[in-house]
Figure 1 (cartoon, rainbow, N blue to C red):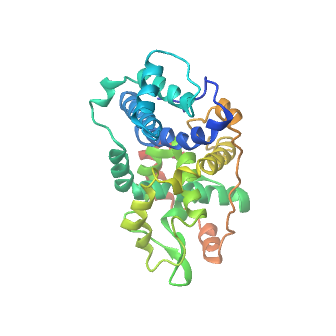
Figure 2: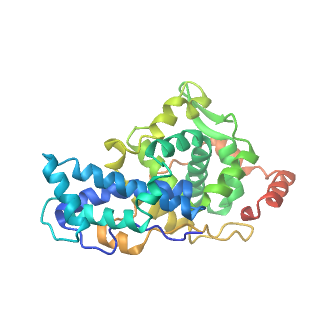
Length: 317
């Protein structure tokens, strides 16, 4: 399995004028890792598609078709060019070729495929987000209870504000089996998922406050917003998304939990990218536990349930 994320810009000089564009483009390169990391051939096809699309968006943004053709001609002939964003275009072209070029495109992967996957996977993605959120809260406010099992229990009985009243709720389809399945699939990318969703929540692009019902959390509105990564309101926040992801990777990738739990093994964001683009960890603002959450934390875990899920998923031990 892939253990480090790669971007087209890591081994090339990017001008200061192009850096903002490069940072925004990184989100497009991040998203396929969430869904295709376990199939390297599929990942290559998605990466080729992303680079091809970004090449076209740069070339087609020029004032006339001659400029667009010039970009394509120069890069194909490996000629130098001082035009705006040509350095980005060249990086994307090399990524496109490295990942199979036209041979990858014939499989027909598009952003719509990714958006449909996000919509279908909204519950597992949100489960993963709230798991990481509550693990961070346990690390910050209740270190003696810091464990994956406790974080999963807090996802199973989630603290939400419904019609102005804060309480613990069970979301439809978020049983312990569903929670374990989501984490067994997404745990290695959970820092990226957290960074993405937490940024959207922080900027009120996703609203999880004062819902009319607990199941509004998995409504079509939320699904559509989660899948809107191609819109400027999302990709313009790439630095924040990565900042939160880096914080999660640093804390949960080092801290051991109770019951000899090992730190989470994340697919890492390369240090070269962090240095090159000036990404910095962002510590999220975390709510302290409510009285009802404290009561939940004080209960002993259901031993039989925990043992059964440990047997099904060894990673939870």
